[in-house]
Image 1 (tube, rainbow, N blue to C red):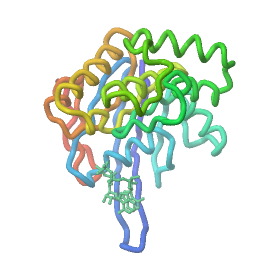
Image 2 (cartoon, rainbow, N blue to C red):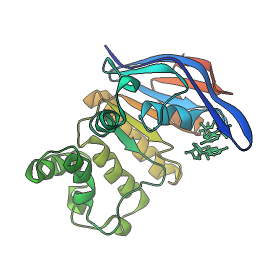
Image 3 (cartoon, rainbow, N blue to C red):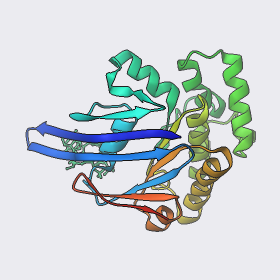
Image 4 (cartoon, rainbow, N blue to C red):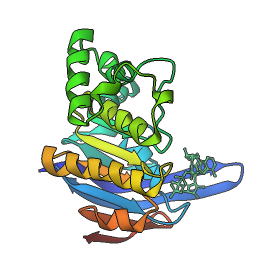
Length: 227
Ligand code: ADP
Ligand code: ADP
């Protein structure tokens, strides 16, 4: 079954510099459990796609269905709830809160989604154990290595059992070996736990190791290949 359906999506930015067609009538679907990479040169529309699928911004035209829900038919408040409960985000720069502990970072989206603190703790510990970093749960992220911080961010992305995980250059700030370890963790989540993952990457070797690669150019899909 489908986790995501993107239909005729267009995004036009009007700024002082003029009119930019960031996405031009893009359509694709992603099945539950698929691990898809999005590649393409700078300015080709990768971030714009993630922003739309992640419900961070609305398109100029077109639709996105997540779990069959037409997300842009929702009002801003329901869209924010949908984003918090159904989308997990992983960033290049980890975006962890450094003044609090690993476990509290992982819990936070759960608390925002309205689950109890006890339930969030028990989920957080299980996920941290599954990702091999439960021993770091009382540390502050700033005291961890980059690879460990990204594992914490992956744990945080899982707390609400999301339908889709969006990873924007998740290995971009890591050395090659650590980046491969983080990538292997995403692959494990996809294959063993049937997570649906969309990853933007500039690394062609990692892209080829995903199930499928979508190549963007000038806001259009130039290639969509099974690896
Ligand atoms: P990529 O992630 O592939 O580098 P983006 O999605 O960031 O590409 O950008 C696609 C195009 O849209 C680029 O030409 C970029 O400059 C433009 N763009 C992105 N966001 C904005 C914005 N907020 N305002 C104006 N132009 C934007
Ligand atoms: P990436 O690292 O994916 O290439 P960008 O540097 O293209 O990211 O974009 C980073 C952020 O800046 C995004 O949120 C994007 O929407 C915004 N942005 C990109 N291009 C422009 C632009 N020309 N004008 C305003 N905002 C932009």
